[in-house]
Length: 255
Image 1 (cartoon, rainbow, N blue to C red):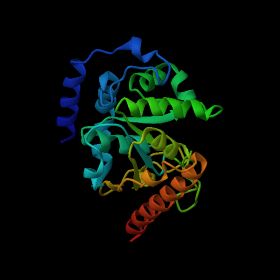
Image 2: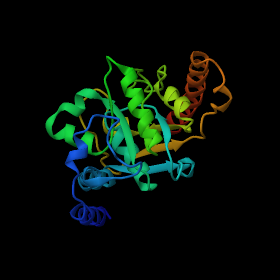
Image 3: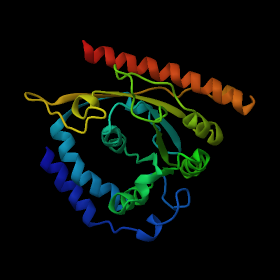
Image 4: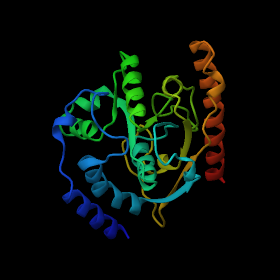
């Protein structure tokens, strides 16, 4: 099956020409339609999809909760450097194209920077977090599915579970009135352990990677509250929901 996926992706790459002019635009000003893929995504699939098929067993749950169209904010826990590969694969398989919020330094490297810009990801300058929020808001308003890791980094907890969340995902959802959808993931860290810079493959069988999509976090009742209050309450709701989802998957994998 891996070779079939590779051939199919290669055929799609050959039929798509890059739009380099648009890839040079600043974050938040690119004319990337919500679910447009372009050459960057097809090249990524060509390289990564066969490796993913060989290295993991996908356990995707409740993917029907992902909206079929329109802007939305996905808030996911972060357990490994490789998380975006596995989460991106699941989202692409549902016919949507993820736009990840990523640190600005990645956008200013030569080859890597071209890929991040061309793929339509959202640049975040950690010295000016508000600019990243504005860029994400514009992307969501264009119909994009923006992925946020609200912990701000790979979890530093020894058990790999959820850390305290930052407010960016909730702020974007409140400003756009877009759904805020929690996504819990577990098992990627068994393949690419956090902060270790190595890959571990199963000797006898592929390792299971579980992705669970949750119901949208309710925010509608907060829209008439003072913004600071709405953000605080929204973050706590997301924290409670996502932590429970992560704990569920962690306990299942432990058993």
